[in-house]
Amino acid sequence: MNYRLLIPSMIALVITASPLANAQFFGDPPDETHPWAKHDHNRPQPPRVEPAKKIGDPPSDAIVLFDGTEESFKKNWSHERKNRKTDWLVVDGALQSMRGAGYIRTKSEFGDCQLHVEWSAPTKAQGTGQGRGNSGVFLMGEAEVQVLDNYNNPTYADGTAGALYGVMPPMVNPLRSPSEWQSYDIVFRRPIVKDGELVDEGSITVFVNGVLVQDSVPLEGGGGYRKRTHPKDLGDVGPLRLQDHGNPVQFRNIWYREIRKRPSDGGTDGRLSKEATAAKRAENAIRMAEAAKELEGKEKMHKLLESLVYQNRPDVYMEALEMTNAFVAEIKAAPDKVDIRKKDVVDAYRAVKYMSDHKLLPKPMPALQELEQIMVDKDWKKGK
Ligand code: MG
Image (cartoon, rainbow, N blue to C red; front, side, top):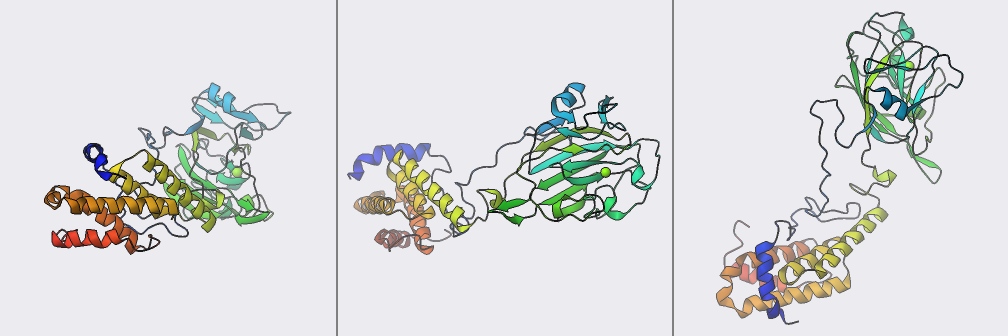
């Protein structure tokens, strides 16, 4: 390859290169269970979500299940009970449970989520224990986060507001009085079954009025009345259900967001299985090698080295070796221009040194010694 022909385009690339064009690896490289380096510039940016102006309102990626309108109720919910004398009502922007109307459920089904629900118990507190302001929010149709007017109304602990009903009481009771709105923010993780084996029984995290009451509590099958439930498969998705327990509890502002999958559920970020890590690293390596084809000169050399950080592919190594050697030869051929190429030399040195330090090169790269010698001669190693 005649490297000199590439110099004009290299100059253009140096001028126009984005800050990330030469991804600088400076943290530990990918390993058997981590497909990305520490502080990897190639790791995808988190997608942008516009938060709501008011905390508790749906952010831009939320799926709204009830926005206060009759239309939203009809569109998103259905009654479960066929022969009922009454329906749930939309009253002043709130969805109200009606005695005898039975449970309602969402028409759409989903699994892991962040769920927001607000509810209010009847202002005039009536009944005691489980009979006062009782309803419930059932994730995937089964795991009930208890809704109950427990402001001044004790009952069995695993049936109080914010309990995973029948499984785990809330840590504390942060309820407001029945005349006020209460908020639930829930993070739900469904059980994961692989090859017939339950590898994760799922968990639930609940904030009541902003106060943490459940922290990654195992589902134990979801709860239920009197009979102890045990970890089980709930499937991939299920409806959200709201309970009619005979009390006119109101709901508003109901929305959820899908959330990042866990590695046990096919998630592709974080600490992964060896197989998933190898697959992701290969994917990254190929993407870098493909991107290198569109580049020239120094940019191409760096992109090829980046590819090798994820996976050692002999053809990529040979090309990176050839380009690095050519770069060093070019620098050495014009000693009077070395100073104006300082950044290029330092970048190349750091890249190859990183590869060498982390044993990412299949064999020693002689260019490293040559670059190191230039760095020493020029006194450029100080202060990195
Ligand atoms: Mg209930």
